[in-house]
Amino acid sequence: MFPAGVVLVLVLGLGFGSAAGCGGGGSHSYKAGTPAATGVAPDCSVVPLDLVNKTLGLQLSGPVPGQHPGGTTCAFQHTKGGGSAPEIVQLNGNATPETFAIVYNGLKSANNPVKKIKGWGDEAFAATVFSVVNINHFAVRKGQVAVLIQSTADYDRIRKLMKAVLDKL
Image (tube, rainbow, N blue to C red; front, side):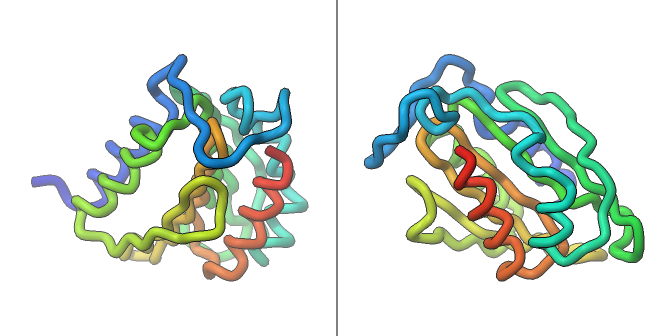
């Protein structure tokens, strides 16, 4: 049996949109050409440092982009306090209800409290992984893209960042 942190890393390594070419969408229709309609994950330009620092209320550096199958991970390192865990925004393309459920199910199977959230995109969930530092996760699928924010900030601040990111999709 793996510790919760290892399971989380394995699950996040799979990503939301790793099934390239899959459709998506949901009960909403999205403006043609937007990531939500095309399924193409945006890059880290949708999460500029000043936006992330302001919304999360943290002093960070970055973003440092990293590619994963189907998208980009934008990592922000703490410049003061906050430990070594980076704040992360994962942007995933070709998201479907099935690929979105991978992280949800992984968090749940590792016995983390996971709650489905209504009113955000086509589907959303939040979870807190208890570790040396508690890491809050907020994930939203909007059409064919999914966004996962992992942060030590509180949920009120994470929601502000998520809203700003979703407005660009």
